[in-house]
Length: 74
Image (cartoon, rainbow, N blue to C red; front, side, top):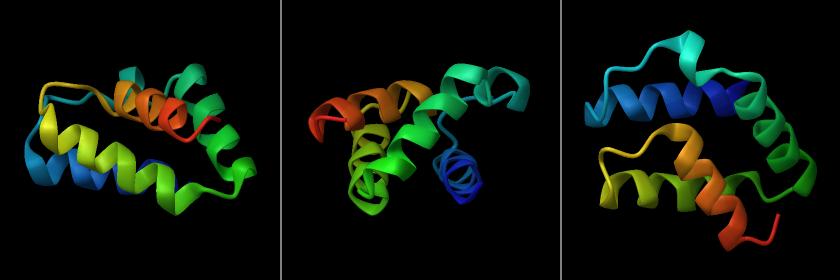
C-alpha cells in the first residue's frame, strides 16, 4: 500500500496529470506494485520511477513504474 500512496503523493506534488484513482489503481498497477515488492528493490524502483516522472511529466505512474521495472530487470 505504501507504494501506491507514495506515487499518488508524488504525482500530486509535481502536478503531473489529473489523476483518477480508479484509472491509476488498476489490476495491472497493483500487479506491478506486488512484483516490485517481491523483488526487494522497492526503493530503487521507486527512485527510478520518480526520476522518470520528473523527466517526463506527462507520463503516468503506471508507465513510470513499468519503465523503472525494466531498468531494474524485474
